[in-house]
Image (cartoon, rainbow, N blue to C red):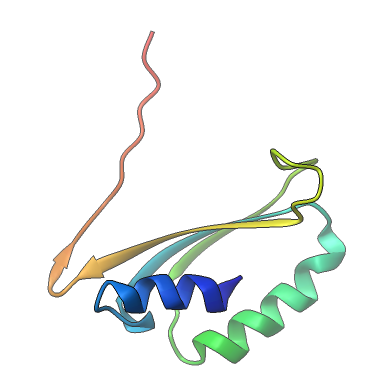
Length: 86
């Protein structure tokens, strides 16, 4: 999954050093060791801020991990903000 994310980032003329935030959702805490090992292998010294949450399920029962990423564009930071409204 991180390799796919890396490819999408590269398609936009960026690289993993542009990665500033990741939100990771896993459906079983037993996946944590593999997730950490994969992040270490692919990201190396790149250390974006990260939230990791264990959830009961994702939208499709076959999905086990979901990752959202946020990147910078050059020297400008792009932030996503969500608000709950009535």
